[in-house]
Image (cartoon, rainbow, N blue to C red; front, side):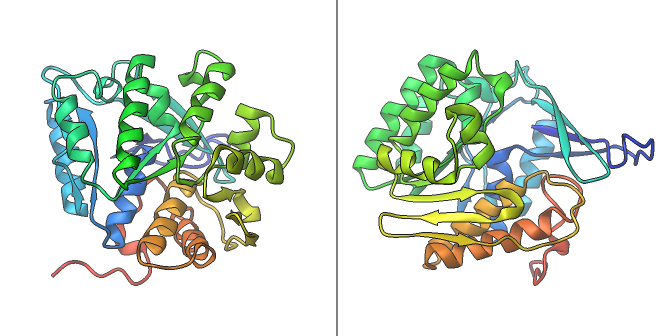
Length: 302
């Protein structure tokens, strides 16, 4: 979606000029993965307007493949606005009820899209992905994921929860449970899981996800770090303490760091440390996707 960021200090009246960018949880992770050099394609739907053209151009410049982006005639992207307080905590306002991405799996060409995605080694989606789709589209997605996993693909799921996307917590709970049963790597956040499932603590969340059959769980706990769990162990990996400017995309950028390290062959605990390193850089700047030059070690392409 398009992103409008109203800046910091709203509560005290010290408002910075608004900026226009783009973002979205799975897109944020895709961009940061591309900055690690991971080959990534993004599947979504946009309009045929100039701002949609601009977003695709920007993603391609980042190294994100856009061959799976559907274009819907006469439509425009969704929009969200971020307000950030003096402590770096953010509030979101959305205008996405008619966003083309909501109809990606119902649109002409959906069969070709799913067939193309079968060639990927990994498929990454989130609770927001599920929340924007109609129930029939979600069922189509589940059937695809079963076929995808049967062919050796690995499914990665971040249970990012936005209550306003769901008719009820009960529907969200049932949907998440079905999704977790199709998940190989889970990257949930403790607050989201407790809100949807009412878990008492982190241990309860991990036990529930492992009960669904998830083999690799990384439970994000904000400033308290994350718990990395598999069948044999649970390890707390501390977060990197920094001065927070904007927590937008903290989890998305953590996911990118973690997944990039895992794809490169690192063990889960080492990958979690890389995830914290990436998130620590992102939350020191405004917006979901920070300028690449602000990442340590980044060099512009030759």
